[in-house]
Image (cartoon, rainbow, N blue to C red; front, side, top):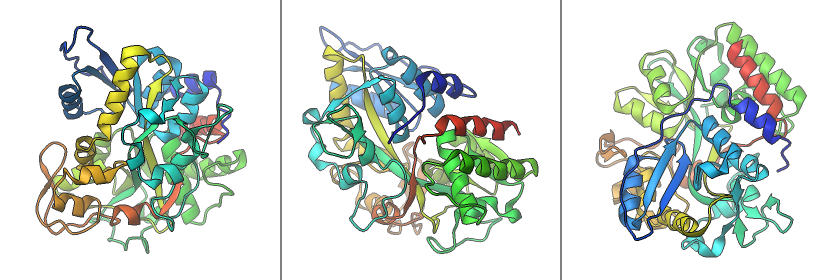
Amino acid sequence: MANNVTRRKFLSTLAVGAATSAVAFKAPYVFAKKPVTLRVMGTHVTLQEELRVRAMQELGINIEFTPMGSAAVLQKAAADPSSFDLYEQWSDSINILWQANAIQPIEVERLKYWQEINPLTKTGKLVPTAKLGAGDAPNKILYVQQDGSLGSQATEKISFMPYVHNVDSFGYNTNFIPKGVAYETESWGWLLEESNKGFVGLVNAPTIGIFDAALAAQAQGLMTFNNIANMSVAEIDKLFAILINKKQAGHFSGFWTSVPQSVEFMLKKRVHIQSIFSPGVTACRAQGLPVVNASPKEGYRAWHGVMCLSANTVGHVKDAAYEYMNWWLSGWPGAFISKQGYYISNPERSKKIITPPEWDYWYDGKEATQPLAGTDGKNIIMPGQIRDGGSYEKRFSNIAVWNTVMDNYDYSLDKWFELLNA
């Protein structure tokens, strides 16, 4: 998709409010005569210590994780490709990184499990009957075309290796909001319902929160969009006029920047309803809160994880990067990440590792028959629970919009900060 975000403008604006975290612990291991250290930059979603330790043990290479907030990691990667070897985040970062020449093409022939990757990434649909959804479905920005642009025509080079993905919506506490019916009565419009005034939270990520808000405004009948994934300046103005008016009237109680913060909002009853990610829902439930991950009748907001090669990665480090990418699709990592509600691009390989009850709950949408542990080993799913939204196929058949960087992203970013400061 065309993108008019200039690198200089992007870097200067995205830095506002971005919070970074410290570089992860560096293990002083030496595995070979010429030790290779692979620097992986990304977010806390996938840069987890259990994954780093396991990868080092199985690959025999030293791995350094640098986790940051989503805005900060994209700013850093686009500005300085020498600061990382591999980048992990979401597909809405691809156009920015590609235009900044921060990443290089990945050779399909070097991806061991490429043929196992399911149709979602390659066609934008998990099954032919699924809704494609507006915006940057992963296939639209996957393949490197002959002219150097990104598109859906299959080639031997890709912009990212597909791995984790999920669909997001909002969560609500049924102690305060009556439980709705998935895909029938649950609606994005609830975020702007007057009855929820003062107890509504939004995710503070401009490329994500804007779509949650837009879907809510459209569901409430407050406005419509010609293309919700690529809003015009006039549409952006109207949307933010609605949001700023709501904020000044006390409708929103906060804008969260991390999953732990979103959980804190719920625990302290600061919000009754808010944008939420899957780990946030399970964390709330683990602490006794009856939080439902809504299945909106309008459809989900979907995202796809991307793993990218720095433009500066060469030689033995580049070889190690391919080893690490292949390791991510080898089975165990996909099984591990499923315990926080995320899917992997070649799930059949992970199916051989996770237990049947885990597969039934996380992928098939069936009732849990025994307690199920999260990535920290603590039980987060109790017998009798059913995953909100149902199966992998059901959830990915109902996509309203993919996380996307719009043509007017620069303008929408300015308006987002205007909303935060209103």
